[in-house]
Image (cartoon, rainbow, N blue to C red; front, side, top):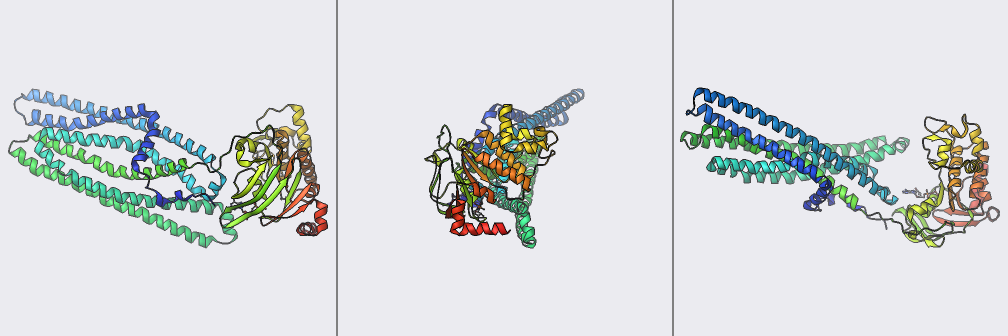
Length: 594
Ligand code: ADP
């Protein structure tokens, strides 16, 4: 019955193949192909400069320090030239490196900016049921942490891995050119390194996945408990909540420590391999030098190259952690992006919505266990004013949510003006319904700004609306009338006054259907009289559904429907229902006593 959100389970991660992921990632990078090419060119410069340095050392030793077929003066001059070239190359490498890092940061930030934007647009299109079923903490993690992880991958991994690969091959080439036997010895170490990397990568992947699962859980838990702090304190659940937080926090710590242990074994292991390689060179290469099969400069260069040879391996293991978490992040981001909205509109737009409502055998539940509406039938004629009453939790607001199509019913049919809801263009439909909720959203600005909401309204029209919504009385008492700044930092409006403002907005928009969820908060009797008058004026000439709490509002309705536990149990006008002496009559009696 409920859509399946199981794909958010962390267990199912890793099933999407890495190659596929890479291809998608590259698609996001594609618009920046030129920048990436430039970054690669810069990094080749860095590599070239880095590899040339040991070669210069070799020439310095063989030709000018050990060699003896040049005069002393020529040797000194040669050495100073070499030293100068050495500095120049190092400087070039430094400059290229700087440019490359800056460029990559810029690229990464831009790619992520685009992705963040797309992800948010996508979220805006998802149906409410999705947000009910997905902890907000998880979605926040997706838009912040996960995107940050991918950013790191773009900036510090993609090009580095390319560099490392090129450098690895280049070094083997140079070594082979200098002395193929010694190079072969070094190449023999490669399988050992590869095995090491493979085992490590398997373990690291699991470790990282475990960490991310725990972090997402922790985020979701925090989000829920922080937003429900009122409930926690009210029901004195602090100890329980803390205990459950501690369990999750401990678990997160344990998983992090496991990953750190893994790295603290692997990184020194690479060091040992590197030391072994250098020991081999000193032993075998030193022998070659004694037998004059290798020059001293070549031996020195070999040792320097060996250091460079292992640097990519060390780096790969470090970058590996970034790649792992970035892949996991990318996977989740793409899963979210691939989720089609379960509730999409049709294309139907009518010249005007008349607001005739038809609900047939509607079943609905927010979660599978608790049905909210059960076989509900409700008909509202165009132009009629219907009040829905009933105890809290009966499902009154839910009916409004369904008519607005924030949710789809699980069973049954809902139609407006004779057309099933699914046929309507969603934006049009919601635009044709004037909604007045208990919470009224204020925009920064004056009372007038808050009525017009950015539209330019002719003075007479505005005056008419202000009068009908009974806002003239309110404005009169404000220091600058309609031009008084309200809301945050300005004049505070009372609940009742905000309701008048919301009614004014509806009057201005003039939709065919008015849905009003009356504020329950105490309203002073003067404002109450104004609100009643404004409601009457707003409801006139359009279909109106009033979720009513006050007797006066109910009395005026053409019809009253009484809802209890998701079922319609009584229906009629005020007089009829009072005479029947049923649930409604008792409700009224209780309110009168209160
Ligand atoms: P009323 O407006 O009559 O007070 P509602 O329609 O708001 O009742 O709620 C009906 C039932 O649905 C209640 O049990 C409420 O707890 C539940 N409910 C309302 N909104 C949600 C939601 N977003 N997710 C889960 N349950 C909800």
